[in-house]
Each structure stands twice: as structure tokens, then as C-alpha cells.
Image 1 (cartoon, rainbow, N blue to C red):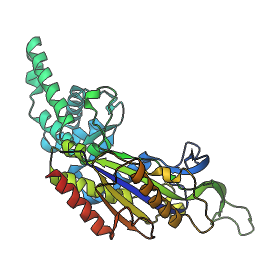
Image 2 (image 1 turned 180 degrees about the vertical axis):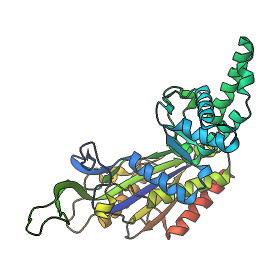
Image 3 (image 1 turned 180 degrees about the horizontal axis):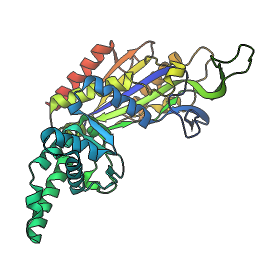
Amino acid sequence: MNNLYIDMHVIQALPPSCLNRDDTGSPKSAMYGGVRRARVSSQSWKHAMRLMFKEHFDQSDLGIRTKRLVEYVAEEIKLLDSSKSDEQVTELAERIINAANVSTADGKAKALFFIGAQQAKNLAKLVVNTDFGEMDALEENEKKRKEKTLKDNAHAILVKDNAVDVALFGRMVADDPSLNSDASAQVAHAISTHRADTEFDYFTAADDRAPEDNAGAGMIGTIEFNSSTLYRYATVAAHELYGQLKENADATVKAIVEFVRAFAKSMPDGKMNTFANRTPTAAVYIAIRDDHPVNLVGAFEEPIKSENGYTAASIKRLGEYAQNVYKSFALKPEHGYVTALYDGLDEIGTRCDWDVLLENIATDVRGALQ
């Protein structure tokens, strides 16, 4: 199929919060346009998206990122052959994982490995269908030949039948680059459309069993936070995803629709119990392109300045900037769809409610795949 990109642009206002912290506990930030911005890393938001995927996909369609790869595959072997002991399935699981060229130490993968649920099941099937006792008893040359075939089969399992999230977010394996899976999606770091300063919440906690004449606090501390209106961007190369999902149109359409849903509606849960900061998005603009992705963060290189809130002003600025970009440097998208709480984007996309927006994306992607 021809190139097809689904660009997602989101404006979202957050109250005091600390979604994503650095190693000192401070909210992550970045310099952009000469001022400090609030920032939420792409990795943090992708994790939140993967958690939401579990609500809309069967687990068999998804992957697991873990070092406990041996334990995971051993459980699948045990389901297929309950006659084997826990020690036996663990030994066999590690053997087949090593055969696939994934290094292990102390019963765990040396690095986090992103494996699809179906891939784990297929490795277990390969173990159950292999007579390792017979293989080990063979003459040396014949044993090496059999082991080579086993390695090839195990490796092949890990490079096909990718789970949806593995196909979207990719996999990197330092030990064997041939096991890498290129990501068909990109997620940008979210940044505030304006200057954002870190603040400090000084708190005290009372000891419920302290004597009545004790005026001191049981605990004192500080939590850092900020508040911001974020610009968030992501894109999916539908043509790449289609190939990774074995040219299954239904699977590709569902994956893209759920990616858009999760990108717009998920939220990292850092300090969520402290700040209760889950907010809806204020605007979603979807651009369906056949040339290349276009990140519109340049709309906010000059930070928004306002005494009446940043959300409506950010939406308006995004719309104006997109029109200028489309006139000067990039082609206007094939299709554009907008769901927003405020005006400002109607010139660059058809306004519709959320469910219709998702339906329109599905229709356009399916039409391009045919």
C-alpha cells in the first residue's frame, strides 16, 4: 500500500500534578523557545497507553515487557504439558529462549524483552514438539544440525506474529539486532504551550495515636508539582503497521483506532492519588497524510502568554500555525478531523464528536488498505 500516516495533535490542560518525575522527584521539564516548559516523557505516556490497550484488546493480541522471560515461557510449557515438573519446564524454557539468541542469567533475561503473548505460546509449542532427550543423544554433527534447526525455528517465532503493541512501539535487542522490531508509531514528549514553573507543596501528617497534648506532626515533607496546558503529538505509519500485522486490514484498523483512543484518553498515573489530576483532553486534531508526518509543536515555540487561561489560546494558536504550515511548507492533509471544547481548529478539520471521529479514521484507513 502507499504511505499513510495518522497524525494526532492534542491540547490538554492539567491542574497541579506530577505525572512524570526525574531522579530527584521533580516534575520533568525541558527548555523550548527560551523558557522552561513542563514535560511528560513519551515513554511514560506509552506505558499508560499500553495499560489502556488491555481494556480493548484480548491479552493474546498484546505483548509483555519483562526480564522474567524464562518464567513466562515456562508457564506456557506447563499449560501444554502438565506432566513436566517446574524444574523441567524452567530448564526447557531457558534453553529455547537461549536458542532464539536471547541471553539469560540467573533464570532471567539480561535486559527487558518485549514479547507477544502468541510468541510465548509458540515457543512453548516448539518445546513440547521437540524431543530434547533424543537430540542430545545424537552423534555430534547430527546434534549440531538439529540444534541449528531448533535455533532457526525459535528465532523465526520471535520475528513474526508480532503483538499489536510490539508492532506499534517496537523492540530493541542489543544481543541480536535481527530480533529488533521497528516501531510503526512515534510519540513525542508532551510539553506545555507556555512557561511552567515548579512549585512545592509543604505537607504535614498527623499521628492518630499521638497524645492529645502533642502539638507536633507525625511526618513533614514536600512534594514538587506544576500545572500546565500540554501540546501532545503522535503519529502512526499505517502502511508499516499493516505489514507488521501480516497485512490484516481488520487488525490494522482496530490497532490504529485503539491507538488514537488510548493516546487521547490515557494518562500516566504518577502521584495520581495525591493530585487527582485526571482531566479530559480539550482538543483532538487528527490529520491523515500520504506524504510524511508533521509535528506542529512549532506553534508554541513562542510561549503562550495569558492571564485568562492557556487552553483556548493554545487551540487557536495551533489552528493558525497549521494553516500557515499547510500554505508554506507541507501539503494539507488528505483528511482532517477535530473534536474540541473550543473554537480554533475548524479551518483545518471537520468538526465531529468523539465517536464519529474514531469511525471516520476507521473508514479512511480501511479505504486506503483496499
